[in-house]
Structure formats: C-alpha cells, structure tokens
Length: 358
Ligand SMILES: *[C@@H]1O[C@H](CO)[C@@H](O)[C@H](O)[C@H]1NC(C)=O
Ligand SMILES: *[C@@H]1O[C@H](CO)[C@@H](O)[C@H](O)[C@H]1NC(C)=O
Ligand SMILES: *[C@@H]1O[C@H](CO)[C@@H](O)[C@H](O)[C@H]1NC(C)=O
Ligand SMILES: *[C@@H]1O[C@H](CO)[C@@H](O)[C@H](O)[C@H]1NC(C)=O
Ligand SMILES: *[C@@H]1O[C@H](CO)[C@@H](O)[C@H](O)[C@H]1NC(C)=O
Ligand SMILES: *[C@@H]1O[C@H](CO)[C@@H](O)[C@H](O)[C@H]1NC(C)=O
Ligand SMILES: *[C@@H]1O[C@H](CO)[C@@H](O)[C@H](O)[C@H]1NC(C)=O
Ligand SMILES: *[C@@H]1O[C@H](CO)[C@@H](O)[C@H](O)[C@H]1NC(C)=O
Ligand SMILES: *[C@@H]1O[C@H](CO)[C@@H](O)[C@H](O)[C@H]1NC(C)=O
Ligand SMILES: *[C@@H]1O[C@H](CO)[C@@H](O)[C@H](O)[C@H]1NC(C)=O
Ligand SMILES: *[C@@H]1O[C@H](CO)[C@@H](O)[C@H](O)[C@H]1NC(C)=O
Ligand SMILES: *[C@@H]1O[C@H](CO)[C@@H](O)[C@H](O)[C@H]1NC(C)=O
Image 1 (cartoon, rainbow, N blue to C red):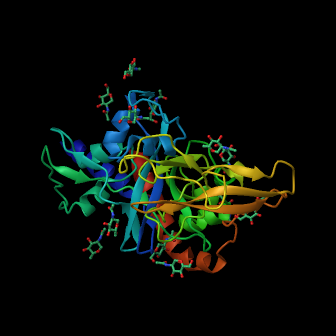
Image 2: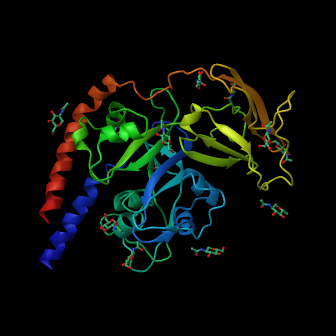
C-alpha cells in the first residue's frame, strides 16, 4: 500500500517533467500544423484518421506524401512514424490542436493512460485535464465522456516568415545538429524556439518544435484557402477537391498545383483552370527547359465558391542560393530566456532523478 502510494507519486512527477511539450504561440490565429505519431500497436491509416479526427483521409495521405489512392485499410506497423495534420489554435501564449482530437473515454481508462499510451505521450494528463476542466487531484473521468486531446503546436512566424510548425518526436541518439540539417533549419533556431540553451538538453522522445519552410504561392488573400501552407514533401487537395497542390524543396519551395482529376465536393463539374489569355491550364509550364531561361507557369491563385483563380507566373531557372529564412539567431531573445531556462532545467533534472530512482 505504502509502496503503491509512493509509486503513484513518482509517476505523477515523471509526467510533470514532460509538460515541456508546450509550444509558445503569441499569434492570434489558427494555422495548419504537423506532429509525429507512433502507434503503440499495429494499426491502419483509417484507424489513425479516426483517432486524430482528421477531417479528410486525403489530408492524412498528403501529410505523409502517400499516393492519393492509398486505401484506409493500409497497415501501419508498431512504432512506425505517421505525420498527423491538424489545425492549431493559439490562446494564452501557447498553441494547441483546435478542439481535435476528440477521444471517447473507455471503461478503465485513466488520463495518464490516454496521454501516454493511446496518444504516445504527445500530450500529458495535466494538459488534457487543463483544457477539459477536469479537477485535480482526482482527475475523474467517465466512460463515454468526450475529451479534447490538446496537441502542442504554434502559428508564430519564425524570423518574420510563415512556417509549418512540426512537433518532431526526437529519436534516441539524435542530435539537434542532425535534426536541423534534416529539416532545413539551424541549431540556434531550434534552441530558441524550444527554450533550450544547450543542445545537450535534448532528450529522446521529446516533442521538439521544428519550423519547416513552407512553399511560396500565388494564392490571393481573398481566396478561401489563403492560409494554405505546405512544407517540403507534402501535398493537399483544395478548391473543393478540384486542385492538388504539392510542395517540394527541389522546385525551389514554390507551390505546384494541377487539376486533381477528382470529383468536387461542391461543384457538379470542376470549374475551368485555364489561365487567362493563354492556352495553358493549371500546372502547365512553357520554357525553362535550359538553364537561365524564363519559365512561365499557369499557377494556382486560390478559389471562391464559383471560381478557381489562376495566374501566369514567371520564374527564372538561373541557379540561385536557396532561401533559408530560419538561420538568424535571436541573441536578444536568447538572453531573455536564459534565467527562466536555468530554473526549468534545474527543476527538470530533479524530476528526472526522481523518475530514475524508481
Ligand atoms: C483493403 O480493402 C480492400 C477492399 O477495399 C481489399 O481488397 C484489400 O484486400 C484490403 N487490404 C487489407 C490489407 O486488408
Ligand atoms: C516500440 O516502442 C516501444 C517503446 O519505445 C518499445 O518498447 C518496443 O519494443 C518497440 N517495438 C518495436 C517493434 O520496435
Ligand atoms: C485562455 O485563458 C482564458 C482565461 O484564463 C480561458 O478562459 C480560456 O479557456 C483559455 N484558453 C485556452 C485555449 O486555454
Ligand atoms: C496494445 O496491445 C497490447 C497487447 O495486445 C494491449 O495490452 C494494449 O492495451 C494495446 N495498446 C493500445 C493503446 O491499444
Ligand atoms: C514562452 O513564453 C514565455 C512567456 O512569454 C517565456 O517566458 C518563455 O521564455 C517562452 N519560451 C520559449 C521557448 O520561447
Ligand atoms: C553544453 O553542455 C555541455 C555538456 O553538459 C558542456 O560541455 C558545454 O560546455 C555546454 N555548452 C555551452 C555553450 O554552454
Ligand atoms: C489583400 O492584399 C492586398 C494587396 O496585396 C492588400 O491591399 C489588402 O489589404 C489585403 N487584404 C487583406 C484582407 O489582407
Ligand atoms: C525535402 O524532402 C526530401 C524528401 O522528401 C528530402 O530528401 C530533402 O532533403 C528535403 N529538403 C529540405 C530542404 O528539407
Ligand atoms: C465522379 O463521379 C462520377 C459520377 O458521379 C463517377 O462515375 C466517377 O467514378 C467519379 N470519379 C471519381 C474519381 O471519383
Ligand atoms: C497541361 O496540363 C494538363 C493537365 O494537367 C495536361 O493534360 C496537359 O498535357 C498539359 N499540357 C501541356 C502543353 O503541358
Ligand atoms: C458565394 O458566396 C457569396 C458571398 O459569400 C454568396 O452571396 C453567394 O450566394 C455564394 N454563391 C453560391 C453559389 O454559393
Ligand atoms: C526561387 O524562388 C525565389 C522566390 O521564392 C526567387 O526569387 C528565385 O528567383 C527562385 N529561384 C529559382 C532558381 O527559380
């Protein structure tokens, strides 16, 4: 009995130590975000879509760059990483998933089991309790109750540039240097965004806020999808499913869109995507076959409830240094967070010791 009490106490402390998975977000906005999920057991893409409340199955496919005809019964192995796309809501200085996922409590569930096992520690029992107004210390939940599972995210600009904030689960043996190089950012940016002062603070299984460069586009600000933001190696369907857009670093981080060839969810027939005063349709390109030649593309400019907008966009194929907006270190910011961070690390270490001691 006494042992059990101590054990529960220590577990609570361990869970406290991992409340670090909160991303700062001072924007007053919503945006799209990504997070890593590793299913504890063998499952299917369809089950993951349902668990995370992803609206459309193709959103999940696009985030993972899986073919558009991949079926929902596709097997996902234990611990295989799947990227979850979701809408982020910023409030009170932090970002959390916007009222998704919704989890229906089963008999025998505890908040800690839901956070740690079912949602692979992407959040903590405390965060779930906080956003669902569940009172400590009893944390009473009822079977059938619908809980909002808050996933960490952000909509903040990074060095003045819109990015896709990606909650990356740190693999054992990984380093900030490896992560920065893999995702096209810098160690300093990662340290700053995650409130760290030294890369040696990185922990396995930590959810790290990694800013991913997003593709630039010609989407008008009055378009219904004006906030469409895609990172390298992802695609999305838009304009009521009539248009497929993808982002690829190899294409200079410029959004590439084309007719999806799918039926629209709104129109009987998808509207024309021909560019005005031209024979080109969305996605067609002329020129640019040799280096340093002007290239004209019929590019996607958004949609409203009756039209798909297109625009002729010129670009040059001259080699240019690829833009990297994430490499200006915020030294002022760094100093500001230093003292706060020292306290954080100290507290963290104390909890770590307690956790290890069980
Ligand atoms: C998935 O479902 C299709 C039919 O929709 C079926 O033909 C196929 O065998 C299933 N695959 C698996 C792995 O269950
Ligand atoms: C999956 O991850 C868990 C926890 O890290 C580990 O115990 C388990 O062995 C892993 N399973 C496989 C198949 O790698
Ligand atoms: C933000 O704080 C206010 C006031 O404390 C609270 O009413 C609101 O629910 C909080 N929002 C979120 C998303 O936590
Ligand atoms: C995973 O499978 C094990 C063994 O079948 C089971 O005990 C556990 O509850 C499952 N975990 C989840 C999150 O479903
Ligand atoms: C997050 O915001 C709080 C309050 O503004 C600040 O003290 C903290 O240093 C910030 N953390 C990071 C990682 O920037
Ligand atoms: C980072 O931490 C390591 C090991 O704890 C230490 O050797 C190194 O001096 C630290 N670097 C800085 C810049 O503080
Ligand atoms: C849309 O963009 C135009 C110029 O590009 C700007 O003048 C206008 O204020 C913008 N509207 C909104 C709602 O942001
Ligand atoms: C873009 O993604 C591809 C794989 O999808 C990867 O090989 C490449 O390194 C990435 N480039 C950047 C700049 O992130
Ligand atoms: C589109 O709808 C038509 C009839 O409504 C159907 O025959 C066709 O298979 C659908 N195409 C796709 C790609 O879903
Ligand atoms: C233009 O794009 C359409 C649809 O993607 C394609 O069928 C057609 O072959 C393209 N034409 C040219 C000239 O590239
Ligand atoms: C399109 O939207 C406008 C204003 O938002 C509305 O007045 C109009 O009725 C809509 N048209 C259709 C076909 O839905
Ligand atoms: C890459 O894109 C930037 C703007 O997004 C543009 O200024 C530059 O010319 C492009 N470079 C190439 C090689 O297309």
